[in-house]
Image (cartoon, rainbow, N blue to C red; front, side, top):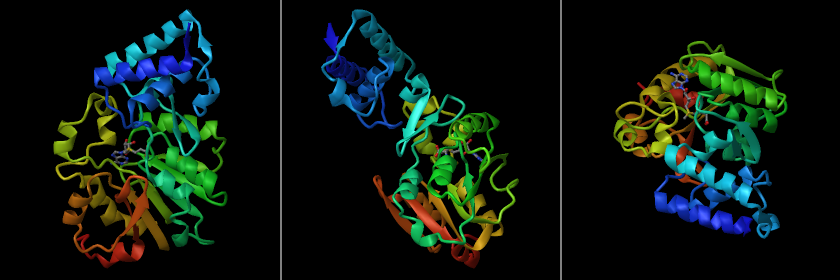
Length: 293
Ligand SMILES: C[S@@+](CC[C@H](N)C(=O)[O-])C[C@H]1O[C@@H](n2cnc3c(N)ncnc32)[C@H](O)[C@@H]1O
């Protein structure tokens, strides 16, 4: 009989040999194999050492092999196979109707990086482009005194978000809204979180299959990736209270962002991905119009 660690190591080699892409919750073959093996065996995914030497029956090893076969053949992110993703230790339901949650904004909420701009006045939060609802849920769990509107253009993504809002018993504090950008959200908000579609056209064309398994609407941001952001910056001040701030993720698009808004005053926020992926902008800066119009 094989042990758990032997199955994980053999699975990692298979994933590497098959050239699958990572980036949907794990960054390498070992972590991805561990996730799939432990999940398939019904073991906790956060303590490999505790189960590493556990023997696995041939029947269960066969089930693990079948799951790895599926991961390799379909190139779907592991989260679509397990129907679960984790962000900041919080579990979320996910399926192909919504992008796999991995926003660095979650880190900034959890580690207090944006607390400086928040206070007693922070009562109404908007998670724009909510996808599976993960940022709305993490904001509601972190800030017990706020209510959250969570908006998305995709009705299918909102169906997934509804599952997560209920799973975390937050129906009384999170309102899901179908909206194209800010069109249908009332405001004014004291904090706006937004992880929008921002991938530029050239990068979209080169995406690995795992990313093409996700809704295109969640990723594609036009030629320079900034189509959604341009409209957002034009509309946002009218939905923000005077002290409000907007926290925006832009992935690897800092160069395109700075080319599009060269004079806009923003604060780059440090995440585990570096200082280039998430920024904060105040209502005042947006209203000044510098670099926006
Ligand atoms: C990068 S995903 C982010 C999802 C989620 N916030 C997360 O971090 O996992 C972008 C989301 O924006 C939504 N979206 C795309 N265009 C939109 C629009 N015009 N108005 C509102 N939402 C939009 C997509 O459906 C998708 O759910």
